[in-house]
Image 1 (tube, rainbow, N blue to C red):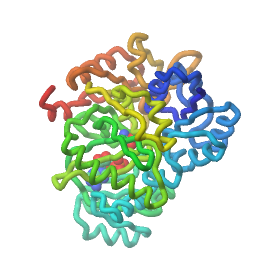
Image 2 (cartoon, helix red, strand yellow):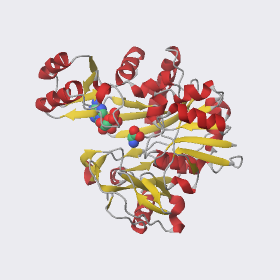
Image 3 (spheres, rainbow, N blue to C red):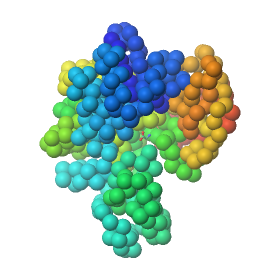
Image 4 (tube, rainbow, N blue to C red):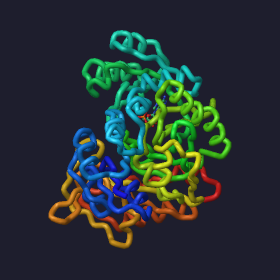
Length: 423
Ligand code: AMP
Ligand code: GLY
């Protein structure tokens, strides 16, 4: 089979490495992929958002199955466009990807169907939002409606910060049209859990849970990033919590989307907060998380391509989806300065013997050498019997990898380890 994967980050590298385990795969194309992915797939210089070019490529290369991994092409209707040409795809259509593409949509969906989430108000003009923040409870959380590269959420600790956030999103258009409307919501507290799930619209199968580390600095300080490391499973997500989430959140969400005529097929990511009042949805993503995927897929024992194809054919209930009991830790190595300004173009050295533990994100090939080209450069993932072992080994891998201007957090997994009885 010829497979096409749309996207070019660490998540896509993890997906490609896992898909390659299927014996029927002859060739994998990555659009655009990256310098590290080039070892495992044929990279094609087509942007993940260039839907007409993606469709042309898929048709002219007789692609048998496509995986659309990032949020933007999903929200833009990449799956719809490929399906029109009879190319089967993993990923939701645009009318379902809206669950991530519009926070106003997802909040209203949760309210309508009684799915637990933070209390909120929607604003369509800055004047009303500014009056609201004069009296609302502080801290408060201000969210741009549309996609904003993971930066559209501002936690305002003071009334002044709340005012500034409204002005920069709605008036100064910091995130362009994504900020035409905003959601202002209640500030929740508690451990966060990421749960990725396979769903074909009727059946929902959660994958192993994970914990992201979003802030740039050690001990959760500094700016929010796309994610600086992950562990799986998440020790806060006990069997009891999982059962509660299944009944109160996962199944109701799948049913709600179907009832709205927006059947979701693909990977639905539940960003949860375990509050003192029970688990609540912080956000939905219409795709695999990054870097959650770099710990979740290495623990998957079933064949990923088989599960993906069953998902898109609405036959998820017919396949087995199994995860190992082991633990995984992924440490992201970034360019120092990320998520703001950073230098790039430094050569990356990864010893051959740990090549299969590394998922490359921000790197390109320069005369055959792998050099840094992005903020998040790569992730090193270890799988061990214990979480402590996985954390230790992941940092050993990091110690063996080198590139100029490298930066990483030193405390990935610490919070999880502190909460784990069986270390
Ligand atoms: P998001 O981009 O939706 O993932 O939000 C980024 C981060 O903001 C989340 O991972 C949470 O840590 C935080 N966050 C979002 N909404 C809330 C909320 N209502 N209360 C507290 N923290 C929040
Ligand atoms: N790691 C968070 C995300 O993928 O949105």
